[in-house]
Amino acid sequence: MVNQTPRCDIRNCSVTFSLPGGGGKPKIVKAVNQVSLEVMSGETVGLVGESGCGKTTLGRAIAQFQPVDSGKILLDGVDLMHLSGKTLREQRRRIQMIFQNPFASLNPRMTVFDTIAEVLPKKSGIPRNEREESVASFLEQVQLDPATMRKFPHEFSGGQRQRIAIARALAVHPSLIIADEPVSSLDVSVAAQILNLLHDLRDTLSLTMLLISHDLAIVRYMAQKVAVMYRGKIVEAGSPARIYSRPLHPYTATLLEAVPVIPERFPAVPFFKKIASKNPSTDPDQGCVFAQRCAYAQTTCREKEPEFLSYGDSEAHFCACFRAGKW
Figure 1: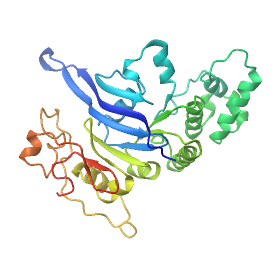
Figure 2: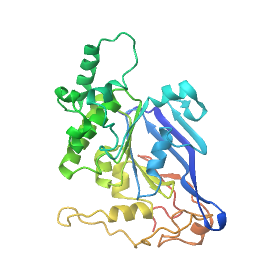
Figure 3: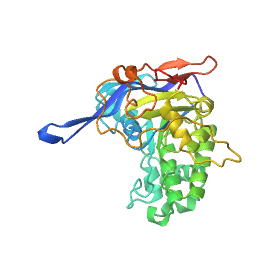
């Protein structure tokens, strides 16, 4: 059940990287550029976009794994940017990440029991058998046999390892879960099982989740809200019903057109002109971030940055485009 209270509120968040450039002058890359995004309590927000658009960097910034240059990241109203030391560590426990590669996200020298028990709340005097019961309950939640808790990660398949990673995240009773491409390295059938598991856990435990993915079908299945990211900017956001049936931004339309479909069952929507296949080598100094690839760009698009405005009346649908839905 989605509550209308923001669990995670990201306001004008920016992350830049300095890379070596010609002539000794470093090149500044705007990985995340003035991004604002709300994740309501009990809601799953899907963050989509092509590789290199800044999705993972934003996720790592929210979890405080990545330094943020400017902006605010509020978790239940607490600004993580102003915390440090023990207070920050306590708040960071409330944000758990499920990483893309289950073969790298688990310590190969720790058993499943140690991996999950390590993150349980530290309370003195808890008997080992009670900790085993707690670990067993979390393994059962992710549909793993508790008898396997003495095994090491190399004794499990990729799908089983990802279930262990999910159990570890749940053990903290997190306020926000950031799932970064959680099934992209798994076989299709195994990926479907993990997605069904996350879907069921979300509903039964009222999880709040930011799902980062490049797979539009996964996001449509899992998310109640979709945010489309391009070159560090959110260019469109709204419900899956709105985004997938009538995209307002040309980039969103191009992403949807690139999804292979079976014409007999799912007639392809005749989306518009093609875009340039490659990203420009440099960020634009002004104007829309998509203007250099957009076949519908006009002079205004190259000179002025479009505002992120709301369209429609029954459902919130936001877009940053001067010709939203009119190209």
